[in-house]
Image (tube, rainbow, N blue to C red; front, side, top):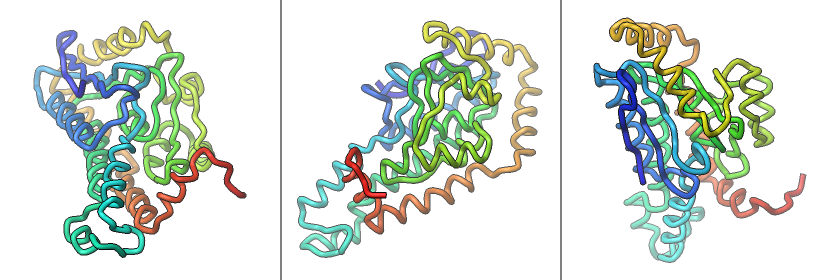
Length: 275
């Protein structure tokens, strides 16, 4: 379990994420992923990185249970994080108790997404099953995406009391579709993204890794120094500063948490809400 790196072929690093049951990453998991991708990119033997995952889906975002455990722990001490009342208020304020996991997830996701984008060599994402929340941040910052026929992509953030990764969804679909998907929390299929040109190939689940490695091998046949220059050049002409754009979004996630909106939405998730 965790993040591992292997070399399935010359010039190719395979970074695999495995956090059962649904690949919802804890805070440390995001940092481990960032470290693995950056290390693979720094290795001069590598000319391409393939990012994939074990299990039912590619990525289910952050581990909300980790945040809930912290929230429950604060509640048990008698601290009300919304009103600032209770016997543990002073200690909670000084230590950041109640928001440590949220801040950690914010920073961890930002680092993992940036690591994919800033990787010194191209990153190919091999996506099977669900790709949600933080998964969109990863694939949206990848250089190419190969997807299984069962792959679905979406941002259920508004249903989870959070915001973020619209920056990366906007790299996968046109602007107005991105907004409609974001506001509704709907998902799109691999075939739909292929039609928009953001997915390179759609293949049966059993052939996913082979298809991703096929593309990676084609990239890895290029001159190693030149492919690194090409990656830097393409990032340099990108019209959007993805790191800054995503960090801007995260500020609103934190505001939703501090205001109590996030807790209210999560508590009502799955229940009928008034219009």
